[in-house]
Length: 294
Image (cartoon, rainbow, N blue to C red; front, side):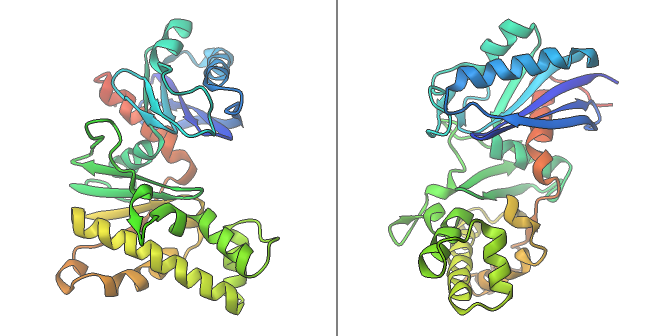
C-alpha cells in the first residue's frame, strides 16, 4: 500500500496527514500557519514537514488550500489577507521543484465537497452543493462526483451572494452570528458554542439573534435549491458539531420552498469534519494523476 502526504492550508492553521491509497489516514497533526508572513513561508513549512515524514516513503503531495486556486496549473488566483503575498504563487511548481514529488492542489471547500461526495454524506449524488459555515461562507458544486470550478475557478462563491444588498456571509456566517450577539447582548461572547449555549438556555435576546441567523441562512440555502435543484446540500464547519443544527435549519427552510421542491431538497451535515479537506485533496490528486485506488 503506497503512502501520500496531504495538507490543508488555512490562514491560522495547516493540517497534515499521511494517507494511504484506500483513504486511511495513518497519522495526522497540525502546525500554525505563517499566513501573516506570506505564502512562501507556508509552502516552506510544508516542504519541511514533508522532509520530516520521508520515512513513510510518500509518493506524492496533495494540498487543499484557502483561496481561488487554478487546480490545473497550481496558481493562486485570489486570496484574502489571511495569507499575504499568496496571489500569483504557483504551489505545484514551488513544491515539486523542492521535493521531487508530484503535487496537486484544490480549493479547500472543493476538497471538502469532493470528500463528502466520494466517501461521505453525499456519496454518489449526481448534483450536490456544499457549504462551509465559519468565519465566512464557502461553497462548492459537485456534478457526477466532479467539482464544477467555473471559467475562472471561482464557482461556488455563495458567501458573496446578496440578500437585501448585504452579502450572504455577512448575515449567515458563524462570525456574523457571534458579532450580532456581542452587539445585542454581551460583548464577551467568544464563539458559536457560547452563543448556542445561551440560546438553549432561552436567553431572549440571543434567541432573537439565532432566529435571524437561521432565517438568513435558510434564505440563502433556498436560493441555492431553486438554482441547482441538487440531490443534497451538505453543510460543514465547526457549527455542525451541534446535533440539532440540520433539523433547525430545515424548519426555517421548508416554508421557503415550493411543495414540489421540498420533496427534492435534502440537508446533511458533513461526515468527515476536520479531515474532509485532507481526504478530498488526495481524491483530487488521485483524479489528477489517474491513480487506481486498490
